[in-house]
Length: 265
Image (cartoon, rainbow, N blue to C red; front, top):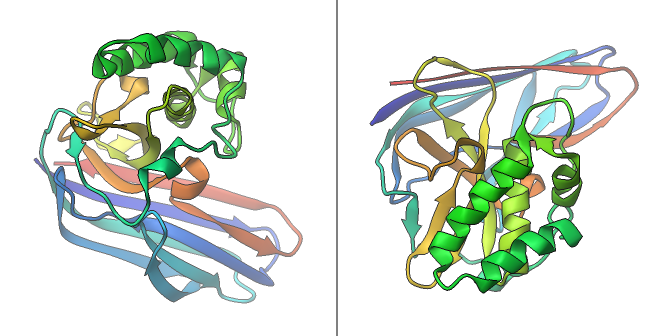
């Protein structure tokens, strides 16, 4: 499948910016599931300072906002050829050892609720089936809905709240898989919903590592494994490692953000 993507993030500042630095992870890479045919990131209101691969292999850009700017626009766009591998990325590894994806992170530290879910997975004879069953259990326990969680809500907090978005579903899955002794990581990217061009937001899912298959994807929110409708952009231990844009700003005044995303064939 050939997907065309245009993703624009616009920031408006109540007062001129004195200093701000943004970390941008908006450049996808070639994988067994996708091939990048064309891609670019355009910045208005700031300057690209450096581009590098972070510890997770994500292509990362550092952007400094122009001093005195009141608006900044970042647009990522391009064409990606995707294929359905039944969610199996395979035995694809970078410089990060698998044991790192067994460690707790700020947003994936398990509590009693997640440990209870992990115990069922730990007891499963067939780990792949156990992971699919766990995905369904999480979706049942945490109904999809916005407004109850935020960027730094932990997996345990989202589970207790009983409502969350794809970020929360992915982090609960990751936390439980790690607690059961299975390496797992967070994936941020795009999903083309077949009934629309305008997408409401970027997407997130999880990958777990099995010795027999390598990395396998699980989209808890949509009760499926990633197929040709998905584009992987960045991975990490949790959302903080793979957020499309993050950074810091000095100065007073409020900041507003508008995101526009189109994904289509």
